[in-house]
Image (cartoon, rainbow, N blue to C red):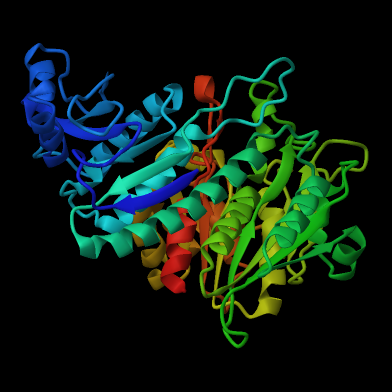
Length: 495
């Protein structure tokens, strides 16, 4: 897909499809009005006949627009002018691209980004447009036999701005939006692949491919023997029951000064989670292939940043493994020793994400990171608390939490700041080890975060629980690509 920014009028730009906005009650945008005047009142006649309401997300194609160089026009509803904002804007872009992807149009220009959108400047209007176009055109990498459906013909999209001074920010927004879209697509691809394809070994091979594609990316893969040498007993306890060998995948992006400390992203990479000996119910277990959503988001964030060419250093640390039951598997009541030296009583083998993340966080210390953010599909409790709308955000640093929260708001990939406190950590006490890996039913997402918190002394750390936001169930089953927009917006703010 190619993107470009333009100041040209909808009435003079040659394109296969001029996409213009219309508010409710026949209230035309400036671009729609320009087309209407040039075509002898065509758009107003269509509205007067009652063919188009202008409600948010509605569309109406017009096959010919006489008097203009546009081959066709697409009217897109923006809703009430008084209520038009970023949510309505994104819905309008998505609706337009959905129609364009099914049409024969090879190129189009979106004119409603020229409208005044509260809290959205030319940069974000263009970035959101690029992200929305890519999201609408994304196709799941299915393994179905037979003929594949034809790909959309749309290959070029323009974003119109009102003033000459907005061209630069819009072009920057399109570049960043393309990068984020590519990162989200990679994250979604990895999350959607079945667990017999996307194994820890497969993730390692995709990391090496990432390094081949980007000069600024370097990769190191640590094998089981390396994990034993590093005394990662907590990580190794999770993978004991699986035939698939574990991998610790280290991805470095070096875009900043050599002397600049990196940001560390730690992603949970359980490529299939059966629950281990604490076996999950069979219903819905097929979706546990997405338990590597945190790892996939680290891949996606680094892919995006590498494409954008941001001037900062990042290290991604991904503990990748399966959690399976077998005669060798860790049993409830077993005690394991983490890389930090802390002992852990494993009361539930299905609380495995925290067991691999704690060793990965400890390992990240060797890079002297200025901040550590771990990302994980960690708890069903977070889904109960926040549903599929907000990511759970926990941190031991108020400034870092505020920065991540602000990035989520800017990116429309929101997080909700949740507490961590010693009162919750009390639930993790064990009679037999330094701590237990679960703390009971109450505040399950919080106690899981508190478990990780115990391994972050001296670190500026945050934890994103994406169990509800990284994956959709039901008829829309599949990976969402979140929280790549949040992560990339935050990383760009650090560059």
